[in-house]
Length: 298
Image (cartoon, rainbow, N blue to C red):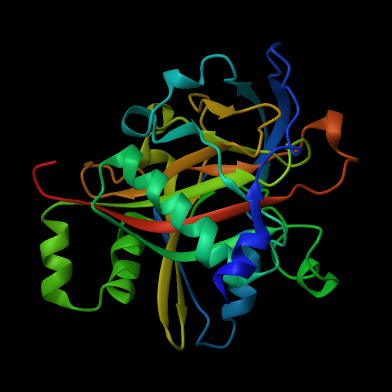
C-alpha cells in the first residue's frame, strides 16, 4: 500500500475517549477456574481417537468461583511488569480508521506497540508472533469465529510451552542460545479500541500466585506439533486487578513468560462479567503477543 493511503487511513486519536470516573469501581463477579486436582500436568492428544472427547471432559472441570476484581485506577502506577507481572501504560497511539485492514494494522499499530514495549522493558528487539482484533466494524464472518473473549482463568503459555514456541520463532539453535543468555520474555500488549465496559480483562497480581500449587500445565498434541498453556486452580490469595473504563490510550502489558525469573511469570488472566454492563455492546480491543529480547547485562 502506498504511503499516501496510509496517511489517509491513520489519523490522530481524539473522539474515542471519555473521562473515567474517579470513584473506585471494584466488581464482585465470578471467574471460571479449573477444579482442584492432584495432577500438575494434563495432556490431550488430538492425533489419537478420543482426543476431542478428552479435551471436552477436561474443559468441563471448570468451576465458578466468587471473586472481587479490584479497580486500580488512581493507583495503577503501584503495579509494574517487574514486580507484579503487569503494567498499564498511558500512550497516545495513531488512530486506525479500519481495523479490518490487516496491512494498516501490521504497518502502523504493531510497530508502535513493539516500540512501546521496548521502551518499557529495555529490550533491543521485539518479535510479534500473533495478534487478534475484536471489532464490530469487521465483517460478520469474523464475528462468528473464535474471537469472543475467553472467560476462563488461563495463561497463554507454561514456561515449557513458551520455550517450545520460541523454537518456531527463532529456529536457529545458535541464535536462540545467544538470545537466552540475555532475558527473553513473552509479553501480551492489550488495549481497547473504544472505552471498555462489557467483558473487561482482569489480570492476577503475580505476587499473589503460587505457581507450584495454582498452575497446571495443559499440553495439546497436534499432527504438526504441540503447545502447552496453563490452567489455574482457585486460591483465596489471588489478587485480581483491572482498570475501570479503560480508554484506548491505556495499554495493558502483561507477561506470559520471563526467562529472568525462576518461576517464569506466566500471568493468569481472564475476561469477566461486570453485571452493570452485561447488556452493552461487545467490547472492541486488540491484543498483540510478542517475544521480547533484553540483552545480557541489561
